[in-house]
Amino acid sequence: MLESLFFDRITGARMQTVRVTLDDQTAESLAALEHQFGCSQQDLLQTAITAYVRDAERDQRERAEDAQRWQDCLAENNGIHHDTLTPWLLSIGTDHELPCPV
Image 1 (cartoon, rainbow, N blue to C red):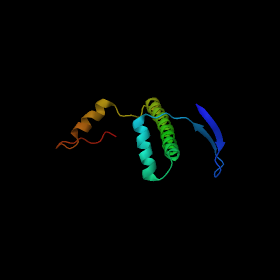
Image 2 (tube, one colour):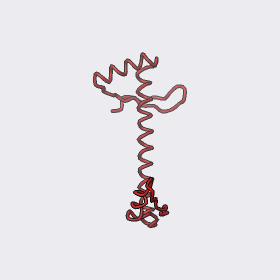
Image 3 (cartoon, rainbow, N blue to C red):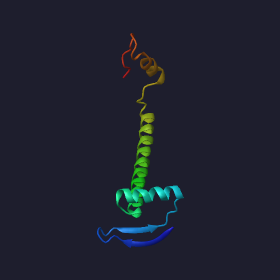
Image 4 (tube, rainbow, N blue to C red):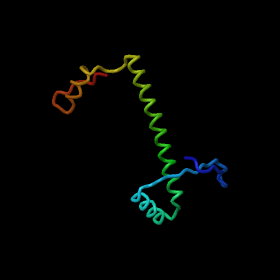
């Protein structure tokens, strides 16, 4: 729920205020961190939410890249078949290591 809209006086960035409801334990932990770090709860929440959003966006990008690489691999048929790779993997560290199939 959007509470208000304002602009940061220092950076000029457009900022939005949102309402967050916390359970008692989380609110107490946040208050303790406020005293420990010497910054406001708002600053702590802003930092945490910004980091979470950044990480979530990165995860989505990486998943999309992984899916595309997988599709490319299937289309190009440039993988190693399981039946070829398994004996080699099982031979690693034995007295009869097989040569790498690649």
